[in-house]
Image 1 (cartoon, rainbow, N blue to C red):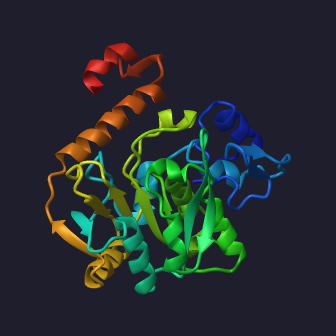
Image 2: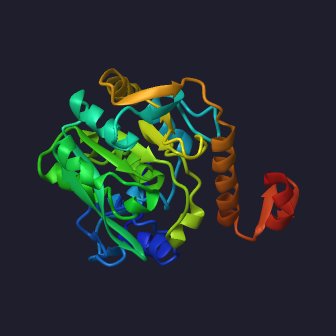
Image 3: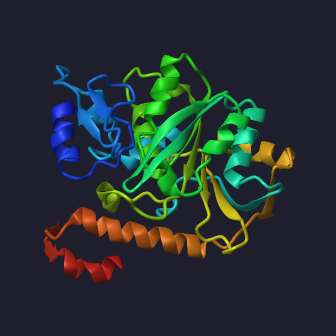
Length: 313
């Protein structure tokens, strides 16, 4: 799907409307967009003559046809409305002193799934701002592994564009769900960008919002990833986490991590109730933000959103 709108429309509908989540999808492959070095927010560099702008069509906040993207990425649509498409969910812990995320990155390099990785380099906590770095081996990746989702708060998808310009292939990325929404839109689009050189997408399941645009997100598990890493729902203080395996590539990386004695699967059928409770609570809250306070019409019925709360909550 392509929409006949460009950078000026993106500016009016997303940036000025407070929906931008600074993911970098709009300016990863578009020369007419850039981002602020202070806040990470996107802005228009110059007027664009394109009537069908890549920037507008890449942004996850302009339009997001979830079922269409799932069908193209996974060959199916979701059965689980809270978690999205997945093959398996397991509970894991590290078998060494390194973090679960770092061990996944190591396994990805060792198994040949990736040759490069886009990671975040936090520059500011207030406001949360991080910029992408591209590393070429697991050793260099170690210092950039995020400890929390706000460590990724910045235009990380521009790292994919930078790696492409450097003629790199087999690129991995650890990012937040919002980043991967934008990347997924680019990957399934008809635009020729080079984003297809991305070979592994690891999502850090989101816990909170540090920007205005976060209040309008409905993906907290990283539904367009190959693997989602979620500490939410795992036993507190255990150092364990859930891994949501969505693709064969994600399974290959997990298998390599287990075979290489980097990770241990502690529960093959974990209790998902707490994780789903967390995800659904966040989804419902932000879905109400998206609806606003206007009347909702369903066939003959007209309801105020406040009247609809009892149904949604």
